[in-house]
Image (cartoon, rainbow, N blue to C red; front, top):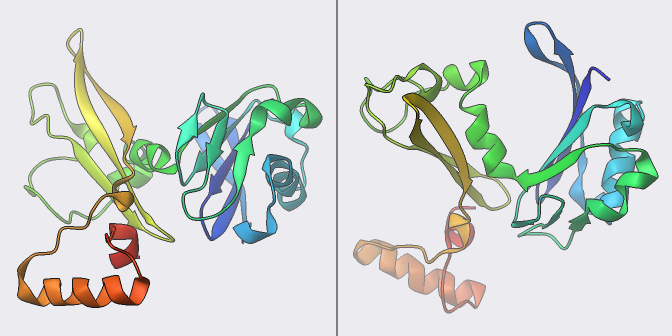
Length: 212
C-alpha cells in the first residue's frame, strides 16, 4: 500500500496519476490523460484510472480527486463547465477503495505552491523580494498567495498564512472567481463588453466568458 492515486478532473481533460510513497517523499510514477466528455459518472472516472494506469484502486492507500467545480462533504462534486457529477459514496466499495477525498482543483493548485515544483515558479506580480510560501518565516511578510489558471474556465484559489503557536501554516482556499462579474475599465473595454454581451446573449459577463 505504498501508492497514492490522484485525478485532476477538468472541464475538457481528465488527468490520472499514480504516486509512490518513498523515504524522500512522493514520487510521480505514471500519468495519463483522457477527454472528460468520455466520462459519464464517478464509476466511469475510477474505471478509467484503473484502465489508464494498469492497476486496481484496491491496491492504493488513498485517492485524491481535484474537481473543477464546487465540492460537497469531501466525496461529492459537480463540474462548473461540464455536465459530469461525482459521488464517490456510491462507488468506493465497487472498486475496493479504502480512503478517498474530493477537493476543488484549485485547492490542489494552491497546495502545489508548497512543493519543490512550486518553489521553481516564476515571479509575476507583487514585491519581487518576497520568497515562495514554503521558504517564508513567521517574522516575514504574511501576504496571501493568489493562484490563477485559465483553462476551460478561469480557476482560482488562495494560500492564506496563519500563525499556530508560533508556527507559520498555510490554508488553501478555493475561489470560484470565474463566475463573478467581470470588471471592465475604460471606454475600449466597455465597448468590448457591449459586443460580448450581444454575441454571447448574456446580460452579465463573467471572467469565464471574457478570459477563457
